[in-house]
Amino acid sequence: MARAMGTSRRALICALAVAALWPTTARAQAFPNRPIRLIVPFAAGGAADLFGRALANALSAELGQQVVVEVRAGAGGLTGVDALAKSAPDGYTICLAGAAALSAIPFMVSKMPFDWRKDLALLTLAVRVPEVLIVHPALGVDTLDDFIAYARAHPGKINFGSAGAGSITHLAVELLKRETGINLVHVPYRGVGPAVGDMLGGHIQLIVADVPFLLPHVRSGAIKALAVTSSARVPALPDVPATAELGYAAVNSDNWYGLVAPARTPADVLDTLRRASVAALTSAELKRQFESQNAAPSPTTPDAFAAFVQAEQAKWGPVVLATGVKLE
Image (cartoon, rainbow, N blue to C red; front, side, top):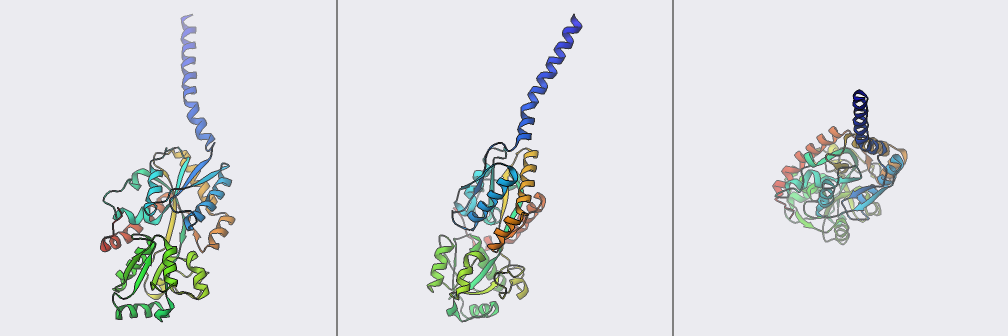
């Protein structure tokens, strides 16, 4: 009898142990079993919003669950990434983080609200967007070298606009100044749209911004493209040289976005998200949508993404510190 009771007790303990493990296993196997939130930390209607919604649709197809875009704009993209970092680490919140929040803003604030190495799980680099340097036709310059020569002859007389102090559109020109020694005056705006409006009105003479945003104005002849600030030309502007081929390889200001999740998200959930993200980014439909905006899907491994962020910080950190720009 005692032996039978001992056997029954052991069986009960084993059954309870299996039952205790079952919910965790079931959750892992079932992921995702409800909609996933994709935070886009930039204003609705912009390039990031467009990329985010296209990616959300592709991820929905890959994961079999709806991926819903939530716009959380503010502080150059920092607000949304911070919200992601503080979200539950269960895989149901991910974020399309931008270049500035991970590579430039850390040098503009006295204290970051999160540490990307400790608080974020990098999934993959998602998309790279080339930038183009444009000038007002009234300057009368036809090449980047012409512009640099003109700027050297007229120090402090040329105004350049940006989407705001510390934005990639600002830092791209600061990088050009750093590499060429020219003196330009910064005029910050609240977004690229107002800056382009003032460019068209002749109030500023230079701007660097995403190719998709500026392309219609370049094609109309209202503004003149001198260079793509990248390593190669873009199909939409085949006659516009890249800074690399002009001898200014260091003047590379590709904008980019990458997918991140909260740190401490279970490894199997991260693996599911990574696989789905790479599959989405390599799908023919998403590639077509991104390339129609002159952007390139750029899936990577998490380690390659981390190395890329570190390289971007090494590039933008000295530029930010030299300008003294602060984000408060």
